[in-house]
Length: 395
Image 1: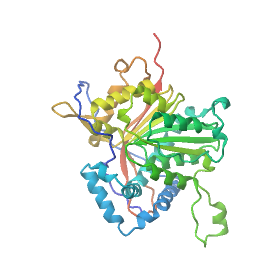
Image 2 (image 1 turned 120 degrees about the horizontal axis):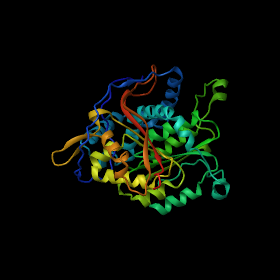
Image 3 (image 1 turned 180 degrees about the vertical axis):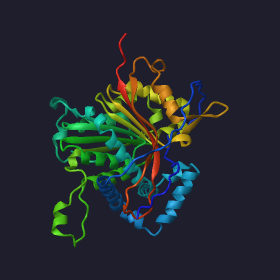
Image 4 (image 1 turned 60 degrees about the vertical axis):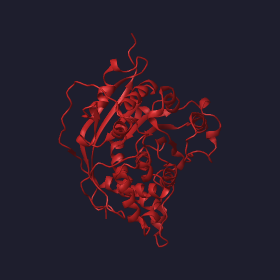
């Protein structure tokens, strides 16, 4: 039974660390607001159970292993010590992490995607037939999870050309993305019209490629039924995402803070995308440093295609604060983000301007009643901000 308890700040693999850089900021910081409460409908609870089933089936052997709790405690200790190399240094640890912490995150992210569905619709693209190349017409290649990309831009560009899409496609670039992001995106596709396809690129410094590939298979393959299943159950059995060609996923092992604007531009392409940083931005600020993270956001403002979206979800309030300067004065992540993106004079002149479309300081995500999962899951609280990249007005 999925137990519901209050959540605490959870650790996420950060970028390669650097010394915190000093910054100055005089504007008043926002105060934390009471958390919003969101109700879970019966239909959403059913959808949540389907996603939990995918995690449960994908990591069945992991969850049922005799040493699961022992390994879980080792992962928790490594995270507590911020020893991320140890926490994510083996496939066993990665799978235990994904089985334990990713399910609740995926359910939460799925709700967020549902809340911004109207904002995502303008991003759907129809590629010109002459720009797609011949390789994508090979059904053996369409919809397949691509291999981990860690050999640099040339391999990524070649992969992108090979898998160019002809459908109405939503492109997602998930910074710090992994197990939770791909499953939440699969649920978004399930609820979209049948002519909508999805192309998600997940980027993180940890080696999450095999975990992502296993979940991709779980999303696009019908679940295995008991031999005693009824004829009606067998007839209704289907994958979450059908046909499998509707979902393409690519994992890239990369430190986002080491990419300049040209590299980001090559990765993002020229068509509108949604960039997600889900429980990632605060780690960039605190572990990567204010200076590098601010530089990344400014580079992103140059590289991002016009009309693209930036979605930021993170811990609320004091859980998302970064220390600045010799006195280590703490500033909320949301304030740092707005300070960088919404002051046009502080952005590169060749880049976009940003418009904030949605913003919530604190929202409770509570699991639906009666959910089933082999281990206890937790409710969680989060903040959410959605920005749109607009063209800079010409002089």
